[in-house]
Image 1: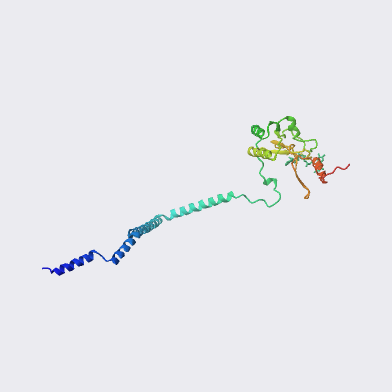
Image 2: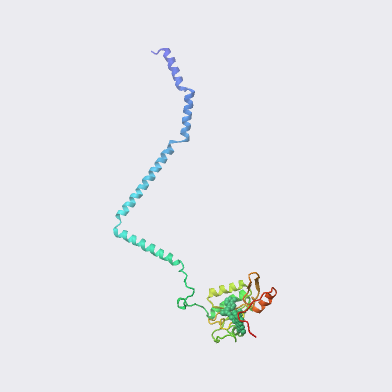
Length: 263
Ligand SMILES: Cc1cc2nc3c(=O)[nH]c(=O)nc-3n(C[C@H](O)[C@H](O)[C@H](O)COP(=O)(O)OP(=O)(O)OC[C@H]3O[C@@H](n4cnc5c(N)ncnc54)[C@H](O)[C@@H]3O)c2cc1C
């Protein structure tokens, strides 16, 4: 038999348990929020991942060690030799890419030089003719026999003319750019070039002993810049010294040739 007072007391106790006090509620609320912000599961997964990574690393190291153990000493030497040969060949190749040191003397004996290689075959020169016509126009590319003869030598020259030492054609450029384009063609086709300005050389300097082409500069005869205070002048290659002096006289200047004729 239960006392009616004890029933009332239990009822009161149950209701107390069912309705927690305010401070308890607040404490419970804070704890739940903390758990939501920092879930325990993420820490666990981190721990799991780092353990997995460590195990994987250890396993790989063990495998490497086991592999090394199973290699025969002969195999190891062969691998070492291969690495040595590979690196020496590679180093030699890289070293050969560097250009050789320049000669220290001011002159090079002819025997030290490689003979010049040219291509003066008719087919190569004929093909070059079209390239030159494209650069200068037909009127500035001459193949007339008289032109070829007059550019092979002169009455002044002490060098005796040879029938097989004539240019294949004569070019008449008017600008530095044109000369540059001509030289590019000659470089690509390995064609020898002889420049010609007044043709007054006495020692046969402009004789085209290797054939090829001749560049006559007669259309490039201008004074480019006169530096009076420095007493120098920049000219194009075909300017004659007499024409130069005509201009210099206007400024009270004079260009003396090395040998002034004695009258
Ligand atoms: C009667 C007479 C008198 C002379 N008097 C003198 C004198 O008083 N003083 C003197 O110094 N010389 C004198 N000379 C020599 C002659 O004038 C020189 O050799 C002169 O420098 C030649 O110049 P050029 O423009 O006629 O060249 P060229 O005779 O046409 O060529 C001479 C050389 O230079 C090369 N050449 C020409 N143009 C160029 C260029 N643009 N780029 C690179 N190379 C080129 C040629 O291929 C050749 O090898 C005299 C010659 C004669 C015939």
